[in-house]
Image 1 (cartoon, rainbow, N blue to C red):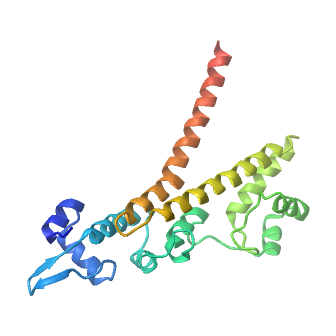
Image 2 (cartoon, rainbow, N blue to C red):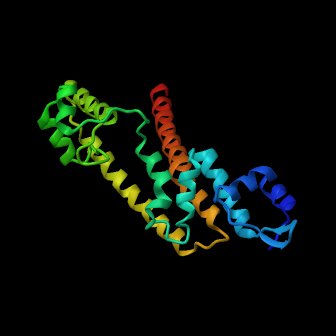
Image 3 (cartoon, rainbow, N blue to C red):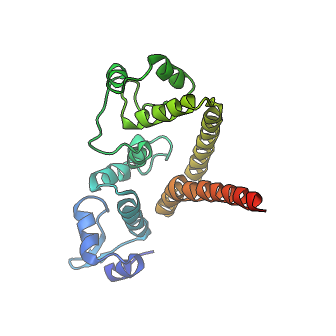
Amino acid sequence: MEYKISELVALTNVPKSTILYYIREGLLPEAKKLKSNVHRYNDEHLELIKYIRYMQQEIGSSNEQIKAALNNKNKSISSSSSMLAPLMQTLINIPSGSRHYTKEEFIDFYDFDIKLVDKLLKDGILLPVNEDDYTDKEASILRMIENFNEVGVEYDIIKKYVHHAKELSSLEQEMQKKLCNVRDDENFSTLWKIMFDALFNAKDYIFSRYTYKVLHKTIKDEIS
C-alpha cells in the first residue's frame, strides 16, 4: 500500500521533519518519486519507522546502531550479529565507564580467593562477558557467594538457578527461530517488538509477579 507523507505522519505519530531526517540519515529508504514534489511511501516505511522509534525509545539505541541493524535486516534474526548489537549491549548490562580487569587484576584488586573464583567459573555462576574481562558485576556475585559461605549455607540453590537460566535461554533461542521463520518486510518491526518485549518486559513481569505471589502466600500462611 502507498501513502502520502501526511498519511505516514498520521499512522506513526512521527513528524514529517523526523521522517525526512531518517531518510537523510539512511535509516529509511528514499520515497517513490512520482513528480518533483510528489512522493509516495509504502508499508516498509511504515514498519521501519515503528522499529526505529521502538529501538530509540525502549532500547536506547543510537542512529548508528539502528543503521547497522537495518543494513542486515534481510538476514535471520539469530544469525545477524549486527541486528543483535543493540540487544547484546543491553543484555550484558555493564554501564559505560565501568572499570575492566584481567582475571589476575580482578582477584588482586578485590582480594578474592582464586579457588573460589575458579569454582564459580566452573559452576557457571560467574560469567564474564569475555574470557579475561571482569567488572563490578562479577565482584557483586562473588560477594554474594562469600556471604553464603559466611553464614554456612551451601550455594546449591544458586546452581539450580543457573540451570533454569540456561533452560530459559534455550527457550528464548527457540522463540528467535520461530520469529525468523515468519519474518518478512511487512512484519519486521512487530517481530522485533515481540523479541525485545519477551526478553525484557515480559521476563521481568513474569519473574517478579511469581516471586511476589510466592512471598505473598508465605506471609499469608504464616499469619493464618
